[in-house]
Image (cartoon, rainbow, N blue to C red):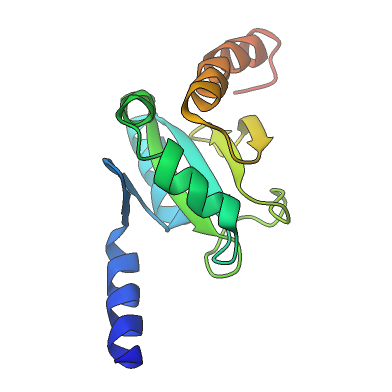
Length: 142
């Protein structure tokens, strides 16, 4: 039974992971290539399999339809397990959940740490546009 569970888990991780109404990929390189091709930004969530706050964020905040609508509108979605999945090690990941908003050129637009309820998370997502435009204006992003 345990082997069957592990097999199902591995197969499902190949195709992505559904959280609420959102489908996240686990493949950093594939998502970044797609972001370049489509000229889209990326929301990357870094979690750990042992993190209770991560599960609470996934099951509560990310499962809310308003959050799903807000993220799905502008971002490709990437969910990274810091202990199992590839991502550039220059990005902070020791404390989770860690949230990154990236350009298609892998530049960090905005990052923050922790569990956030729906209202506060949406406020952070709204701040990304402001951060992006401000950094563009200052020449900090390509």
